[in-house]
Amino acid sequence: MPDTVINTVQSHLFSFLWKNKKDKIKRNVAFQPLSEGGLNFTNFRVMVKSLRLAWISRLLSNSNDNWKAIPNFYFEKYGGLLFLLKCNYNTANLDKNLPLFYRELLDYFQELNNNSKDNNSDLILWNNKK
Image 1 (cartoon, helix red, strand yellow):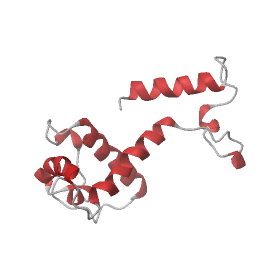
Image 2 (cartoon, rainbow, N blue to C red):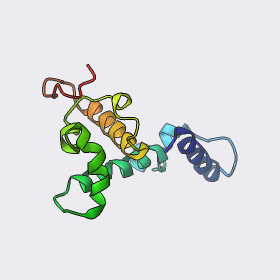
Image 3 (cartoon, rainbow, N blue to C red):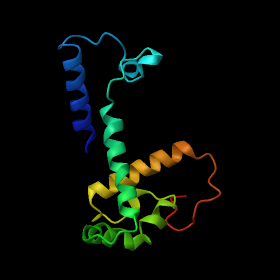
């Protein structure tokens, strides 16, 4: 989903919350839980990323569903999804025919992975952007 769409939806959600008036508190505070002084308001950007990342578990499940043939076709060029997720890839270097859905899935996974890892010693050299 393009950033412009995400920003537009998030802006409309805040306009609805504040009845088309100026925000009463910072948006980052609104996303915080009630126990931390926030409004527990939905962060649409995070929701989009989490829904996209949920597809990874579906794609890696052991079931032999027919719909997996399409994503497997695209990921086989790089050793399969499981192998690719272990690599330090750059989606800009991947095949231009890779659908945007899968490209965003890989970008979001890499963003999540980079935030949770501080050590690159366990990365595979193949598909490594460095």
